[in-house]
Image (cartoon, rainbow, N blue to C red; front, side, top):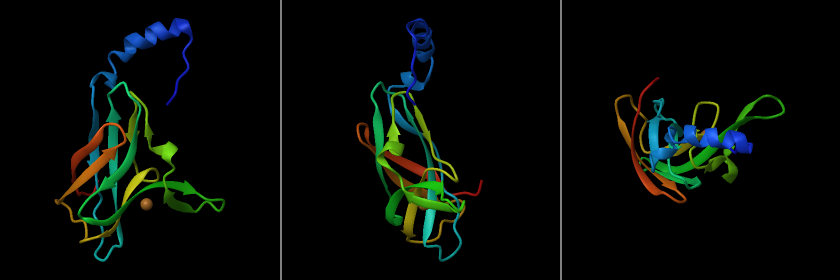
Amino acid sequence: MRRRFSPVVLGVALVVGACSNAGSGIVAVTDSWAPTTPPGAQAAVVYLTIDNGTDTDDRLVSVASDRCGTIELHATQFDENRVMRMRLAEPSVLALPSGDTMEMEPGGLHVMCIAPTSPFSAGEELNLTVSMETAGDIAVTTAIANR
Ligand SMILES: [Cu+2]
């Protein structure tokens, strides 16, 4: 999110900023989960929370896993008939400015695992590679579970 500061407010914001996640100095996946799928499911979903603690704007480029035939990054939107539809996320949606956190969630941005090699079962772990434009590849192990 871009915020506009007046000069007076800016000084306060810089002090507050020193205490925020902007100080971690890394881009990190701070949370992730993948719901279980029924047998024969053609797709599975993974949700990531990605925190940009650097002073450089970044962008989510792609996610890979050997457990998926293909992975797409999807946004969920309601069409004119209020039907929920998924589509490829626009590059602007995948931007992760300095100090911001990208939270994927049901009904919003998500990782779509197309043609999983086997159903996602509770208790399994899923290995992912999250590729950021600037920070590069981040290895993530995600728990498959029902929340
Ligand atoms: Cu999707």
